[in-house]
Length: 139
Image (cartoon, rainbow, N blue to C red; front, top):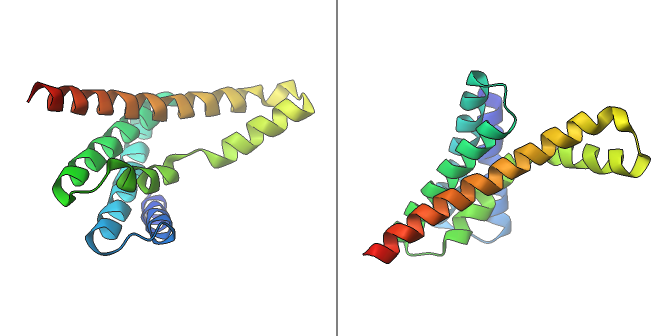
């Protein structure tokens, strides 16, 4: 479990460097990526669902990025892009596309799991963004 969290931290750190983040923004972004992976792994121990861990993790990462953006006076996207990249199911996307191209019906289960994971990421980010922008419009 810790290997995945450290890998996500380093992955987010690497993407932060690639996008020329520095100082506090870089380290907070890397922490955000590591926390997202930790939450995803934690929730996946409690459920068999493919969507729930991604939804909860993306919700937490997006919320963390919204808070960081307000505290560090930067756009949310600065933190969000780098921190969400470790959650993206890259292997599943590759296998789903390979399945579609080769018309192999046996691996459609992997493709549907990947679609559920990606939907979880989108839903988690959408719900969190909606809550934050709803709150800020009331103020």
